[in-house]
Length: 383
Length: 187
Image 1 (cartoon, each protein chain N blue to C red):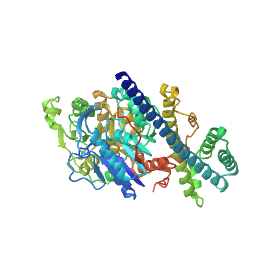
Image 2: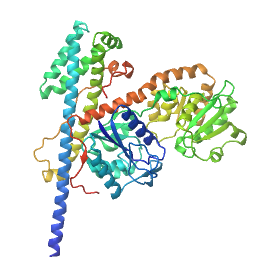
Image 3: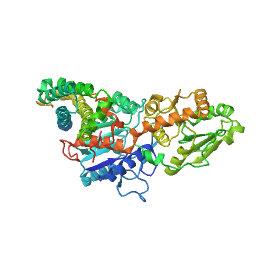
Image 4: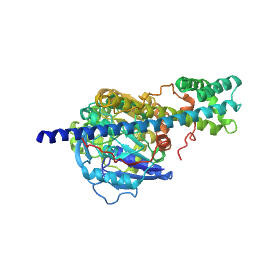
């Protein structure tokens, strides 16, 4: 099958959607499909063979962080060119409700188009304001995929219609087989807590964890907090009493391999995110690696953790509740083993083998009885 | 003179806009036709595998009869009764595959593993195809209702598209991923 995938965010900037598109493309290529990915890229060197660059991006604030997107006539022309050259059976666009390359593709192409909606931002006024303009482009989408039941609900609320739920994929075995690193493993007296995420982005929740830390260390004195992710370390520990600052170790940005080893090693993984999450891939990665998970009770997280069966939940933004749960889990190895066991069984549904097969089933459903993808030559007033 | 030019320009722009809207409608109807064809194909696949299983002798006679009757009715249903007949097939499948042990039993019969994986794929794809179809119908209905479409009769004689409503809940034991890795026909 000839498949064209559109990634709206810059390829050379790390991000959840980019990783999802990369893993999906590589999974489909391994299965023998012909895949081309169109994505913005600021630096054209070192791009994989299957990637076609859509040019440079413009930084735009979107969904609480700065997204690098591209739009305008030059990008639209590149999209048309790519659609024409690619001769695809199906197009798969990501995040088409953002003002992005994916939306441009919906304008420029006709034929079977599949769209995956990643974010669920309940406060997106722009989406509502641009509703009628969006609708003309979005009604060309033959099949919509939402990454979680929560994302599906917001999608239905904002844009009407319906979507099937297919979660994001993870290479479960990559995490399950990673080796532990003695520097990051804890002992009964000195357990380790792990956190992965941008330090300077408040919605990732590190400040909540920092507020909970004094209580955790008071009850389990040897505890170390290991933080992997970009950001200013000094600023992150500024709220801590001086005596506690050496309990926190910053590892900076880590590679995929190190992230897997990190998650294999820690005694407890904490995800204190305060909002803006539609899925929670890091939770799936932590579960794959066998780390017991303690996460805030966001809708999306509760769903990924099987409503608390595969990982524990605490009341969002409640540092005291986080501290209580962490202290209890760190002192209860049997409970942690039980969580590990149920997570290992639960996490299989997120493996690429399952997720990839579901996505291919969607492709097959929409290409059945439809003509191939082509540029849309009808008069299209560009709002 | 100027007035005439302005009137002409307005008429022209209105014409372009209306023709573009007609194009949108046309495209939506093509999309719905394709989605409906895909849905029919999935429903037929499901009914065929169910009927095959019903006559294969892997179930007890009562279960075989229930499943056969429902699958037969779904395949033969007139358009008016299609939704009811397909819903009844869903209910029959849920009743027959009510317990996980049944799936294992069928899987162990000769050729059973393949039948189970085919049926598993079909019961997962029916809701998928139906959502895609009804999503298109909803978009078309929203546009059909618009003033410009009604006043200028842009929809022509195209039938007002109808959603396909049915109970498509798959049997839990068949839809569950743990039921087996072979439940996909992706490649």
